[in-house]
Image (tube, rainbow, N blue to C red; front, side, top):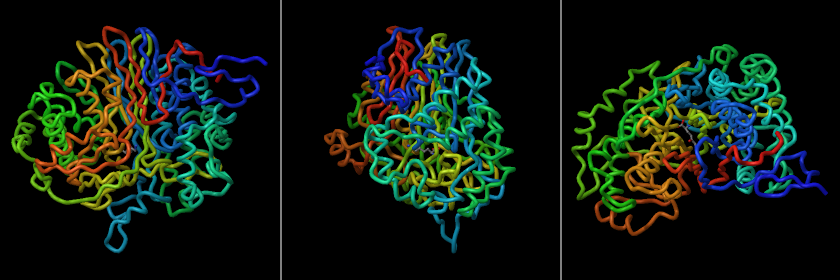
Length: 567
Ligand code: DON
C-alpha cells in the first residue's frame, strides 16, 4: 500500500477522501523568511500555509485560514459571525478592518425587555440573538490586500466541507455537550446531530455548508448577502421571531477603523479601536503597569499580581461606563487614555490592600463563564503580518444553523448592554453607550494585536475569551516584555482575570495558590474556573520566529517548511 507523509503521521492513500486533523506542535522555532500560521485548528493553519505556497501573502493565508476555520472549527470559526483585523504590511503600512456584526435596523433599546426585565435568553438564543453577520464582507474586504483569486483561497474549505475531516477529541466532546441545544433549534438532520455520541476521529461532512461556500465562490460577496443564502438566513431566524430583513443583509458595511497605537516598555503596540474595547483596555492596563514599574517584580509574585489586578479593575470599570460603537456614541478614547486621566485613576492604588470595586464604581453583576471565539496570527516571508479575531460569540453561536445553508448564526446581540447594569454572558455590564439600537455595533473585547520594536515586528498575538481577552493579552505581553519569559512560557503561564465586577479574581485551575493566599490577606478573593483564552502568538526576535499555539486547545502551528494535505 502506498503512503504519503502527512505532517506527523502516515496516512494510507485510501483514506484521502477525508482529512486528518493532526495535532500540531505547540512551539516551533523557525528561521525568519518563512511563512507561519497559528490558529485554533491544525487543518486551518495548514490551509493558510497552503495559500502561501500557492504564491499568496499573509492576507491570502489569513483568508484561507478563516474559510477553513468555518468548516473545521464550527464552534467559533464562522461565516455567520464577525471579527476584527489589525495588519501591518511589509512596507510598515498599518490598517484595521471592523467586520463586527450590526444590530438589525428594527432593533431598539427595549428589544430584550419583557415585563420590565431583561431577558438574556432572548439575546443569547433563537432568532433575535443574531446580529447581521460581517465575516463574509470582512473577508472580501481584506482580499484587496491579497494576491490570489478568492476561488483559490476558498478551495480548501470547500474540500474539507465536502470530503469531511476527522474530528478532534475536544470537538467530539463539545458536539456531544451541545447536542440538546442543537436538537432544540434545528432539524434532526443537521450535521452536528448524530444518533450516537461523537468520538475522536469520527468524520464530519457538511454538504450544505459546501453548497453555500460554492455559491460565495461563484457570486462573490453577494452570494451571501443576497440570493438563496440570504433568504435562508431570514427564513431560519424568522421561524424563531427574528426581525432581520433583506435590507439589513444588503446594507451590511465593513469599516476601516484607526489602528489604536501606543508605546509600552520601548515597544509600539498596534491594536483594535472601538467598537472593540480591547485596545483601550490594553492601553490603560499597560500604562498602569508602567506607573508601578511592573518589570521590577517577578511573574506571579504578590506585588506584580496586585498591580495587574488593580489595573484590570480600573480599566473594566471604564469599559462599562464609556464604551460603545463610535458611529453612535461619543468616542472617549483620547480622554480614557490620556496620561493625566490615567494618573488620577491610579491614585487610589494602595499596595497595602485591595481597592473595593464599589469605590471604583457601582453595581454588582454575576459572572457565568462560557465562551468561544477564535484568533489567527499570520506572517509571510516578506514580513506582512495579520492578526485577526473572529467569533460567533458563544460556542456554536446561537446554536441555530441556517436550514439548507449549513452554517451557524451568531448570538452577538448579547454583547449589547440589553438593560443598564444587567450582565451579559461574560458578566460584563454596560449602560447607554452600549444600548441596543438599529444598525449599531455591539461593544466587543476582541484584541487582535501587533507589537513592534524599533519599527520591526516583535509579536502578532490575540485570543478568544470574551471579557478575558484584553487581560490575557495584557498577561502575555507583560510576560515577555516585563517578566522576561520565553514566548512559550508566557503563553503557557496560568492566567487570572479580574473585570471590576464581580469583585473576585478568577484563576485557572493550575494557578499557584501560594500567591493567592498571600493576596487574600490584603482583601482579594479568588475563584477557580476553567481555562482562560487560547492565545495564538508569533514572536520575532534576532533568533528568528517562534510560533506558539496555546496548549489549552487543539491549536496548531503550520509553516512553509511543512508537508501539507492536498487541498
Ligand atoms: O466580541 C466579544 O467580545 C465577544 N463576543 C467575544 C466572545 C468570545 O471571545 C468567546 N470566546 N471564547
